[in-house]
Length: 341
Image (cartoon, rainbow, N blue to C red; front, side, top):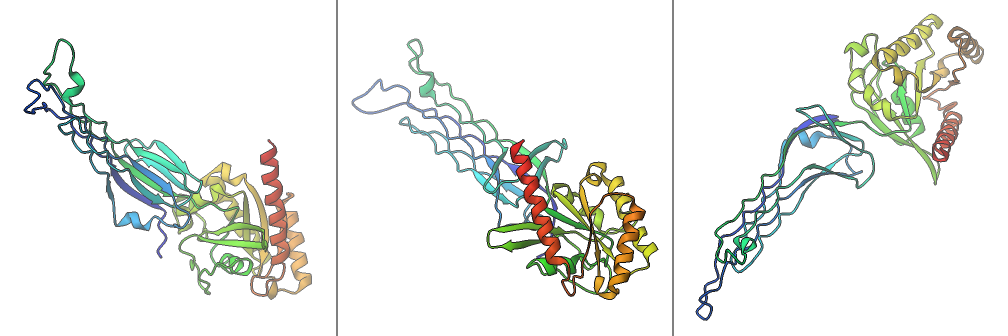
């Protein structure tokens, strides 16, 4: 299924039913009096999280969502039926904006969570409501109020513990295949990843975490070049960034690729650039072990930082298991620390 991470829709809540103007007329009750009932409330529109969805593609085809109106009141003090609410299913991680004001209405991050996006109209009152000691035959009623109408912009930010980033053909898709059950497209040309891929990395039956792969970034991505800028927002929800680098290149090119990604992260969102980030020198299978060690030392010295560096081969899966355990331990420690705060 095509991945779509942004859509615009219109929601219209139902109108409240009008109150009824009616008088009781029976043979044995010549002075029966008013008996017009109230109308029913119009249906509200809600967005509800469904973990089974992972795309907003359905909203590209259906853009108008309209709840039903409440029924009008009836004679005999019968109240009009309230309309059922309209519930629209959306993926986990959906941001909801008012498209006209750009106001953030809600951030749906929990399974089953509901967000009211359009309030249904309230019912009108029947003439029985206006009966009094000085007005025995009121002809007054009120109409139901209109339901809210809104233009919404939905943006999907995938939820993952770890986010992969790197230039095209660095081996991100191969890596996520090696450590999880995800099966993204892998080929020997750039931009094989055209939309985010999610994979669950299982350490054992009760220990797992989610990893996300986004399209590769190129220089100028923060200004709109390439594909990655469209999906960088997905990394904002991750706890750890895993920077995959093609180690089979010349050492100078390896350093250049690392600097390129660092620069694009800073230009796109400085807060994102400050997230915990580990470096993974991938494609170790094409280098001799001693050359790989030399490259790792050179990268560590050049970066002049305490960034963690791992060596892996997504093809042979060398180093992948050790890295998976390290990521799980780090994620678990972070979650425990947040819970204690």
